[in-house]
Structures are given as C-alpha cells and as structure tokens.
Amino acid sequence: MIGDIRERIEKLKKEKDFCILAHCYQSDDIIEAADFTGDSFALAKKAAGSPNKNVIMCGVRFMAETVKILSPEKRVFLPRGEAGCPMAEQLDTAMLSQLKEKYADHAVVCYINTTAELKTLCDVCVTSSSAVGIIGKMDAKKILFIPDCNLGDYVSKKLPEKEFKLINGGCPTHARLTVSDVKAAKAAHPNALVLMHPECRPELIAYADYVGSTKGIMDFARDSDNKEFIIATEISIAAHLGITYPEKLFYPISKDCICHNMRVTCLADVLHCMEGTDGEEVDLSPDVIKGARRCIDEMLRLG
Ligand code: 13P
Ligand code: SF4
Image 1 (cartoon, rainbow, N blue to C red):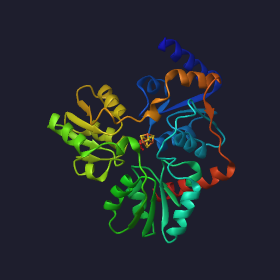
Image 2 (spheres, rainbow, N blue to C red):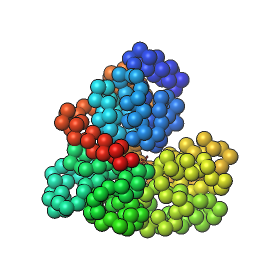
Image 3 (cartoon, helix red, strand yellow):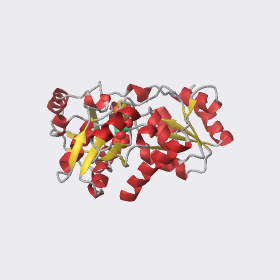
Image 4 (cartoon, protein in one colour):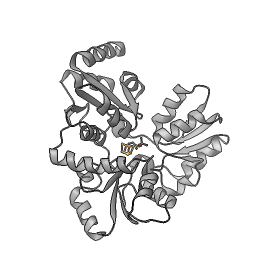
C-alpha cells in the first residue's frame, strides 16, 4: 500500500515537475519520499536552487510561506491547509504595530517562525541557529525580539551587551517541558548527554550539555563520542537519530513533546496534493513577498 503511494508520488514528481520538502519533524515515510530534508530556512534555500516549478512543503504554513518568499515564481503547496504553527501566529500585524510604537527606539528582530505578514514589519529575521551571531552583528543596542521569549532569553544571555525586550510568546511544544521532565530523564539515563532546543524554558537550559537548533542537535549527536543522549526537542528527532545512528541510544525527554501541527500531514496527503484533489496553494501578495524578503535578505547580509 505504502509502496503504491510512493510509486505514484515518484511518477507525479516527474510528470508535474514537483520538488518535495520535508521538515525534520515529519514522519519517516515523508522524509523518505522527500527530495530535501532539513530546517525551514535550509529547505527554502534548497527549493530556490531546485529547477522544479512546483514545491510541496511538508511542514507548517510559515515554512511554505518562506519557500514562496524566496521563490515567488514557483507554485508552493501545503498538503494540509490546517497545518499552522501556533507560535508563528501568536501575534498579528496590529499587535506588532502597537509594540513597535511602544518600543520605537528598538530594532525589531523576528524568529523565522513567524507569518510572512509579520516579517514585513520587522528589521531582520533569524533562525534558532543564527540568532546569536546575527543579533550580535547588528548596530542596534536595543532589540525587540518576537515571538519566542525562551529563544529570546537564551540569546539575550549570550549577548549581555544588548538590551532585549521580550514578549510573552513561544512554542507550546517546547514550553510544555518541565524541570521534572529533565530530572526524570537524567535519573533514568545517568550516562546520557542532554541535547536541548533553545525554545525550551530558561530554567531547563541549565540542565543541558548542549543547546542548539534541530540541525545543531543532530550534528552534535553525530559527532559526539558519547553513546547515549536525552533529546530535549520534538519527539520525532530522537526517533530519526535512532534510525540514522543505530549504534547510539536516543531517549526523548518526554512522550508529550509532540508538535501535533507537524503530525497532521501523512504520505497520502502529499499524493493527493500532487494529484490536485487536496491541499492548499500558498499565495502571498507581491507587497508581502517584497516586505518579508527584505527582512530575510537582512539576515543573509548579516549572516
Ligand atoms: P529549527 O528546526 O529551526 O531548530 O526549529 C524548530 C522548530 O520548532 C521548527 O518548527
Ligand atoms: Fe511551531 Fe513549535 Fe510546532 Fe515548531 S514545534 S511548528 S515552533 S508549534
């Protein structure tokens, strides 16, 4: 059955000129069917460099928007239109405009996990791996960082020379992890290193042996001589690492660290989207593309 779906997807890729992107949190069967796997910005760059006219983004809406911003000439599809990121949608443009008025002397930095519309109002965009480096290179001393206060707190501690204004936003998947989770995981696996995403709450960060983006965590696990790891990020990463490095042991920090929005897409949805019977084409106005692109270009210039 799965083999049949895979075959039809492979056929349609050629017939309809599709490139399939899968964020690392997607299921194994989607990752196997994808042309590229990675974090959201890496995927958008891969799509921009691909010759295909059509792109399927297996992930959440802001990721498909980022693909469209970098490749406005391509048609970009989300297999399940309801796959959104709660953090990316925590603020709207009216709320951000109010914050900008209140903190008018601050430069506005947004995490890439924001809507394209919000990006049009920001000075520069960052990823979890580039945030410290990029904000460190900005001339501005005062930074309004949206929307993730946990990532913002992590970055602010690395850059004590800057003044940060954080808002009360964040990723519900990572924010639900507690100190009890990390203590229990460490007690159960005393020889394991704790690899943690900076979207986790500040009081957990103190327990981490390594803090970094999804890609950072995966690279650390690959390069480390240690044999056991507690993976303090979305549960899929422990599973993917276990398949890639079967000689090592990966323990998810908690069975509750699941992003349900990332789970709504299954392989059949990818097929139906390619067939044109389901899914949603992500379209953005030329003004939004231009405004959001400026914010991303500033990240590339500083990075
Ligand atoms: P990165 O993959 O950029 O580390 O982000 C994690 C995440 O929460 C994706 O939605
Ligand atoms: Fe959004 Fe968090 Fe899910 Fe990533 S893990 S898509 S930041 S809710």
